[in-house]
Image (cartoon, rainbow, N blue to C red; front, side, top):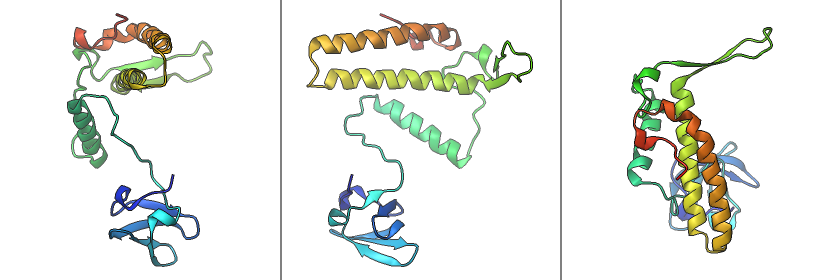
Length: 180
């Protein structure tokens, strides 16, 4: 999808169909100064088919509590910068902290796979977050009939039911998966 000046920011990587990948250095009301490999160029994003060269996200319809979004974003930034290493994973029961999930094949010639429980727990929590987001997107969809929404919610409920297997990992009962 072509970009507009409003969707750009300084330091953003972009792709131009003729000049390739570049980095935005400055912006005006209608143009962007971009450093491409061969030379800096001034480009009008609205007419140049400029696209993003990096993953982007639109948060206008995101239906998660703001506190959760901010907490997860801050935690990811802290981890990416290597500022601190958390000893305790929020929400994971104390008895599982610093534990390991071991997957052992019936084939003894294969090495077991070890996964830190903190990593596994994070994946489970992300599944829950994505299911909640999916639920809110279904509810907000004006093109689906009530019967279609109900049917899709039934599949989500079944997913929650399957995930109750992992409730033992949660510190707080109210954070656990439930089907009702």
